[in-house]
Structures are given as structure tokens and as C-alpha cells.
Image 1 (cartoon, rainbow, N blue to C red):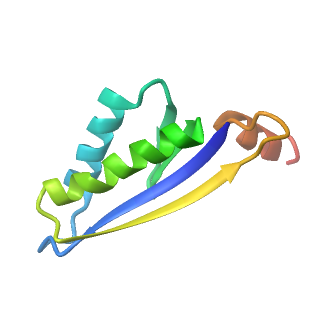
Image 2: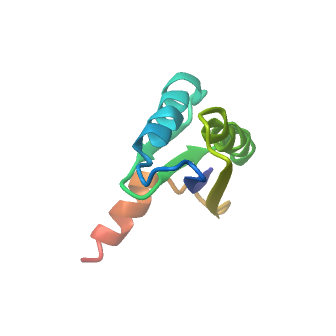
Image 3: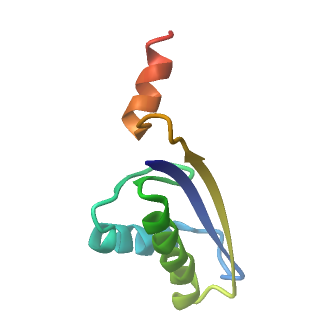
Length: 100
């Protein structure tokens, strides 16, 4: 299972507000996350599940700002693909909290 953090930033929109674009991406996640677990954060979205499935979803999400008027989109992707054991979002947070 992979844990992927994405941040999609539309450029060339004429405004500094990103929330309409984030909301459009969140809507896509809610309607078409295909069983993936995800968490919206203040600085991006964390998705866990099959890496191939996540990357297909990220490609669709990257297109949303263009469909909503952006002239340029910068998408940052961070992938944690651990294959020796399961590494869920909750498990990763718990592992750190247990050490505090």
C-alpha cells in the first residue's frame, strides 16, 4: 500500500484564492476515489491505497483546475511506497505519537 501526498496549485487564474479549485478536486475525490482512503489537509491531500490506482486519480485531479479556467497547473506529488509491511495514514501518525 502506498501513501501519496499531493498538492495541486492553479496558476494564471487572476486571483490568489485557491479554495474553489480545491473544492472541485475534493468533489472529484468524494465521487470517484474508487475505494481509496484520503484525507484533505490545509496544505494538500493524502491518499492511501494501490499506487497505480492513486496515480490515475492524480492525473484526473491535475486536469480539474484547467477545466475550471486555470492557464497553468503545478502539481507536487510525494510517494511513500513501503512494501515490507502495511503503512496506512493512521499507522504512520500513531508510530510517531507512540514515541512522544
